[in-house]
Image (tube, helix red, strand yellow):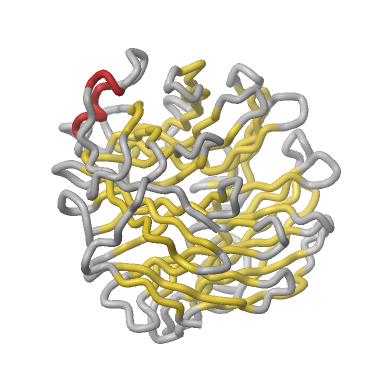
Length: 416
């Protein structure tokens, strides 16, 4: 499979940025000059701001979801939903939950009627503490209905997948219920967010679901992490049926070193792709790990890529050719500190030559990537280079890397 890709030194002429987009793009550069920033939008508050998901919409636009105004204690987080077009023009922007404590969106889905369903967490409504959260928005981004689920402790969901009956299965973790410190939380809700069943899975240590995808047979595949008492974490992949019954599960990684999942992709042929950051298999620090599983859960191959320092994936999305694009952040290449990372993986051949960083003088982190039909990509994250105060959320469009070449110290290898 031919990969047309590029990595870039993001020195961007002002003319390359549409008048509708933010010229703060000029404050970021790429590590190797093989890609160009076409436009950049940032979303700001006095405190930290993130974008966690990007959804392509049926009308050709995109919905980005995340939060604004985050601090560890005492701040008023606001859930963020932004509809934006491919040229960087904002169609509408909504902030939900102002004045209510913590509200954050983490995953989003477009329903058949054009409304949006979002998953995340909140302290504004619910049983107390942080609770799992599900909201339904109109086509213009206004809340129609919202629901919270949980107990007195920390309960959250970070992804959702559509069910055959028009409802959703939400995936996350709970401290209020279960056998361990944290356990996998799966919630089946109808289209209005009314809970229909709840499943808790876990061992005596920590277990969490981060991602969920619907399968053609009516079941679901889940990715997250598991950590037994006295052990470092491993990647966990699990299949359930339409009623939440476990069909199989697989742990990936070496028990003596941490392997942390961030991402889940269903490939067109039914195989399952999961990325992680890993200190297993001889990594010098964290490396980017890519695992391909058969539909029945057996591991088909594992590859790693990374430099001498810390490299971490945060999400993955496939393009029309089957190449999986991975967003994250790196200290191995770039302008210094953390820089947003873009790399690419061929499920049949392993990592490609794409290993590119985008950043400025401060820390810059990638969280989500969405390939576009013309070969360019949307890359989202949060950046301190764009702000004098805190982390600003950003969404930018970059050209597909052309003739990329791995930095001298970056190694890629098949380990299983």
